[in-house]
Structure formats: structure tokens, C-alpha cells
Image 1 (cartoon, rainbow, N blue to C red):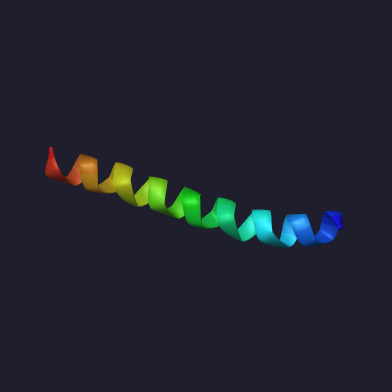
Image 2 (cartoon, rainbow, N blue to C red; image 1 turned 120 degrees about the horizontal axis):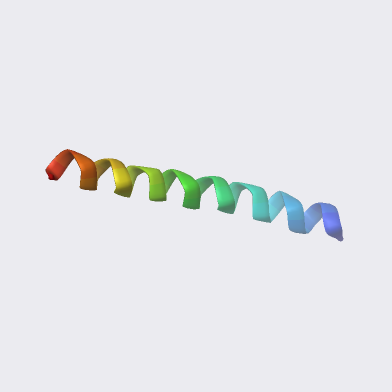
Length: 31
């Protein structure tokens, strides 16, 4: 059970982190 939750949570965190980093990068690039 816990392994299944982690296997779903880890990719979700990675995607969220990548999207957040891209947003920050785009904000810095435009200003």
C-alpha cells in the first residue's frame, strides 16, 4: 500500500517541481 502511494507521489512531486522551476525561469527571463 505505502509503496503504491510513493510510486504515485514521487512522479507527481517531480512534475510539480519541474513545472515550478520552469515558471520561475520564465518569470526571470521575461523581466
